[in-house]
Length: 257
Image (tube, rainbow, N blue to C red; front, side):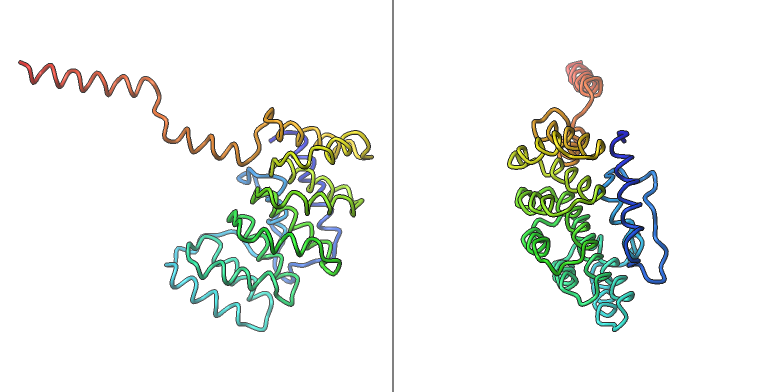
């Protein structure tokens, strides 16, 4: 993790902790060393609920999550949404989209975080619209920006640029700039160049420089890293390929004799 990412993660944590608490009686889990997508995932860790795989079948997990989501207690609804984080089912998105419109901000934030972590492109229009609304609380907007950055869909770039025009908070601006770099849409270049030139925060200016380099292909973003890792997974080292070829050749030679 780069120094700039570590510094921004700390700034985001401090900024979020300075806002009114949203986790109720549950503990706030700070990001640990296993989290490789800082700082966007750090916001998710500040939300209520923990990241755990349940081991249930998809049918059982959906049934239990729907039961919890029907509860009057928002903390139970939050846990219901968390329970479907890893569940591959059409019902999962239906439940998470309900969460985006929940009456309680804690539940909405959990829905935003889970959709972002799942990389759900279908959620981008709804998230972008919520980011524009004046009545959307600042903490919810911050999570929306982080989720859009994690999803990486180009449609999220313009809403984040508009968000940047209306916030002076350093942690929020840094998160938005980082998210633009992760999305990688050149439409953000002019905004990022202006931030690199004029922003009062050295940290935000540094992140703007990195975002510009990501968009230009000089630095990899999370999405290009994932693509590269997927390709590497299916690539055999040269010595393994040669070893298999030798084995095939030896087998053919033995057949001849």
